[in-house]
Image 1: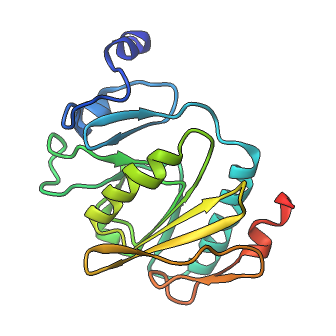
Image 2 (image 1 turned 60 degrees about the vertical axis):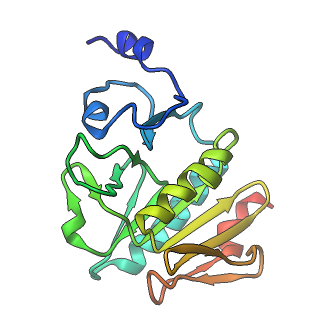
Length: 202
């Protein structure tokens, strides 16, 4: 099927959940990034801005270097994370996301197509047009799937907030900004200096 034909058939977002599965996702041939959240299709409106890419590159480099030689691994988008709730069958999985950065400490969750199951840490960087998806839609599926730690970085406000999973529910930190060094409970020993992260935004 031609790409234009697929685009004509798939409208975004759908009003009802459960319309599409990971099996459907594998058959699509979109030219841009596509995510599937509870059966609803979300397409990226535009390429990330320079500030987004600089922050993503810096944070990923810090994580990758810190984890070198350790069991946990860091991955950067595009990288598919499937979040099965009931079954790992492709027809039953209705959430496939591409976090900006994720850390996976259980090697059994990795296959050639990406990750099956909740990463230990997910970092998302806000961009114009994706705030609702990151702050509401992804927040809900990450909490439900059991992602231990969810970091949201807001480039224009130079802030970072950490959501930590406690008894199945996220608890938010205060907003971190310049002058702060943040520690990860999901990746013990990892520290991120926000002066370095936001230095190019001043």
